[in-house]
Length: 214
Ligand SMILES: Nc1nc2c(ncn2[C@@H]2O[C@H](COP(=O)(O)OP(=O)(O)OP(=O)(O)O)[C@@H](O)[C@H]2O)c(=O)[nH]1
Ligand SMILES: [Zn+2]
Image (cartoon, rainbow, N blue to C red):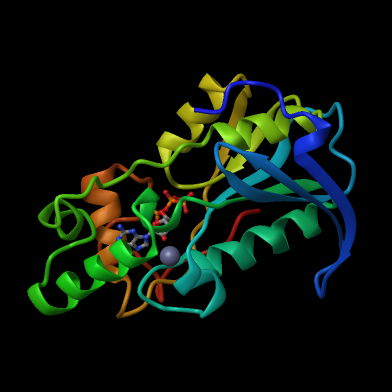
């Protein structure tokens, strides 16, 4: 857990113009990793800031893998922040594979493909934890940025609890739903049924599903 306040020694900021628009890129060190917050508009001292806390997923975010929905959620969240005119995306490193790392995550993929195990059992069969993510760096950077309260784009109740226990009030959860496909429908179903994520019922994952955050 990263409980102290971020110091300027651990932060560097620059303008970052992207295809979507203009952001402030805030690189910061916390909990042994280097993370980044992308800030759009001016959320300093503001309540109800639209925020996405995004867990690193190299395969989904960078390579567009369809076996999870991370890449599409990343795009949808940035689009929503730009539409809103203000908001923060916190990209957390060290979260790969829900904290077990990239090599271990790919090992879970092998078990999913070859043995038909789901995203939980494939981890536990390897003797690994299902989820050991630490969200405290996100709370630390949001406090550093002067965000007062948050509308969080996520389907995962753990993220809300983690932010609140980090001192950041979450005044609303904004669903972040993207279309399901044949490759990730089992993954989404396991997240809903076994991890308690707030996701639609079977048959209602539109290709099915739905809107990004509004
Ligand atoms: N161990 C493991 N991790 C995975 C697998 N697929 C994706 N991940 C990781 O899961 C993390 C994303 O967590 P999810 O449970 O998909 O979603 P979430 O971020 O908790 O919830 P949202 O805020 O609603 O997106 C990323 O860090 C991915 O690397 C898998 O099959 N096994
Ligand atoms: Zn992913």
